[in-house]
Image (cartoon, rainbow, N blue to C red; front, side, top):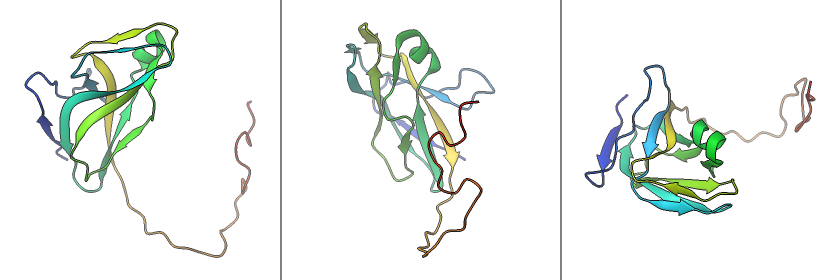
Length: 143
């Protein structure tokens, strides 16, 4: 699979994997911003992508930002569909009690590419039963 990437400015950074076995490609801020405690902002990466049909990209948090600074992606995972051609932007939220400064070129999230199958939906009068059936939240307990 090939993902075409277009830089919107010369200083935008292409997504990159930090280590050979990594699934996620780091996404970098293409702007500076300050996130106050409890605040969220849309942060641009300065990139557009073209995914082949049958693929999606998911924008996910960086664990180090979450653990060390309380910064995460608000709509995680954010889905980028194959037909989208706009700039990749990340909704970051500050869950800490301290201001957080975002620098241009800083890692802000990661992007993971997935092959997806689009199902045909079929309306039916009844569904088959299972062992779990309609038991939902907390149905398997904590231990």
